[in-house]
Length: 212
Image (cartoon, rainbow, N blue to C red; front, side, top):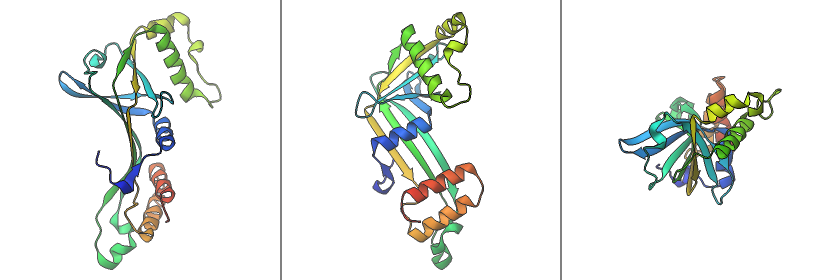
């Protein structure tokens, strides 16, 4: 992706936090019919270093696991909060009129070769870990032990796992860093006034990335 230096995020811990906070990835692979995109929750493992690995699974009925070119990288896109930015929020616009609309967002791209996994124990461990990652902290967290064993075995037989050792990790935080402090303050004010949760999340990113 096009990623100017002032929008670039390279800290692995920040990128990993983003992936864990926004685990539903757009998973892009090259197939015999061209590019294919699936939307899947992926689980990030810290090892192997330096970028870790992504674990996921798909239905056996999904042709992606049979028809993918494992000789080239797949791409997993983890999109974070985003928001429309109105030029009317910029104080500089009131003075010179030189402003246009834009969009602020945070996103992480992870690249690597896909390894298909059909081992039943790997799949059971993966599904258990994926469930725990999203159930932990709930008043009554669900685990696979809550369901009948034969039922789980049947469902596990209907999925195929995959692993992507991440070889390249890119982050882009486009949150008004290319604007002066007064415009950034205007963006924060405009976003927080909307009352929208996604706008508030983007406003927090704008604050975090520089003076506002």
